[in-house]
Amino acid sequence: MDINVRDAKYEDMEGIIELCSLIWDGDDYVPDLLDKWFFSGDPFVIAEDSGNGKIVGIDHAMIQRNIAWLEGLRVHPQYRGNGISEMLFREILKKIVLRRIIKMRSMIWNGNGISKHLSEKHHFSKVMTYYLLNLDLKKTKFENCEERNMIVEDVFPSNMYNIIGYFEDYFNACLRKYPDGWVEYEDSFFLGNRIVVRKDDSGLLCGISAREKGVFNINLVRYGKALYQCISKAVEFAKKSGCDNVQVNIPVNLKSLVREFLEFGFEYLDYSENDSTVSVYEYDPSHADRKCFSGQMGIKIQNLDNYFGTAMRCSFGFPQVVESFPVKNERPFPTLFYLSCPYLVYHVSQLEEKGLIDIFEEENMPLYEEAHALYKKIRKQILNSSYGFSDVYGRYSGAYDKGIGGIENSRSLKCLHLQLATTLGGIRTEAGIKVADILNNSGIGLECSNCECLRFL
Image (cartoon, rainbow, N blue to C red; front, side, top):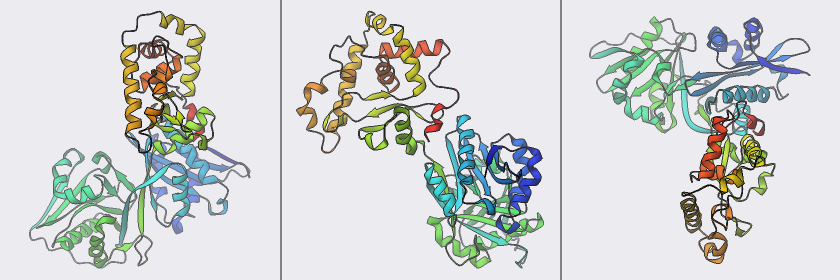
């Protein structure tokens, strides 16, 4: 089986719709979004069987300024189990990272073990969980809400901040995000126009979904004695707007609120009586650091026993400078900052070959002594604050009294990689500053343009 993953084209529309007809019993929301996906310019890829031209998988990411929301991963039922999901997922990640977006999220139903495993494998972790409840208006009979003391207001993204205080408890429970069915927004701009329904001590922020056709979403809730009447009013609006479903996301730490909606006629996502939930997964670049550093250095992960953390990242989110713990195999390890970025390592080596170490060592470096002193101070603080290592400094004081990277002669630079790493790590040296200036002024810069380290994920 030869599967080709490529950018989606408008001519693929028919094949994508055919694929989606096999998902969610033919009730997939993706076909309603295809026009928007094609013309938004956001990452959108398909998997194609090269043998017969059939579209057998799709994946998409919605860009919300500096956040990428992964959605719409679909694989043809007859082609599952062939690694197509991972091929699509990795291609979408690549396209997102190349845009220098490192904040990525997605929402996954708790019953979808494959998607959860795929996300966790690629360094996503669960950050939020909701009960996602749905009210099918085609099956629900309801009476119009009593209008007395009911306040209904339009709210636009530009004045959303005026009403957040009213929903403060719920908004905080949502980690100050706007849940909207299968997506979450940090910026109210993407939420669009909403209405606020209020009565006495209760209220709802709600409106028509911008993503799913025929869906009316309740985004924020102020829960009180009049909540039932507020839900009734929202349902009335949904019906008048031609919507078939009303959805609400309830944070798991507000489980007691679920009962209010179930009594009204809402059901769990999978229509069971169980506590069905959906979770937001977020990409954490720090979870990938050890794997990336291992690839950058050509060292097995298990041998990175004194890797301490990432001190500097490129705009793609990958380590450029890592920090080392001052002890390795029970012996002193005097180098705190290590240059790991292959692009920088190569170009700094080119500068060394031009003899810049000798040139810099002959120049006046008034800050260098201070940098050595700060380096030694930080190294000692790390040891003294680490349980089980506080006595190491005393046993190896000779090694730890040396300067940057174990340098004995305070005029020696040792190597330019060390100087640049130390400067980027937060301890500025004249040589490190000059190396950075040379790279920037020559057009090389301090990072690549094609995300070379993506291959290490």
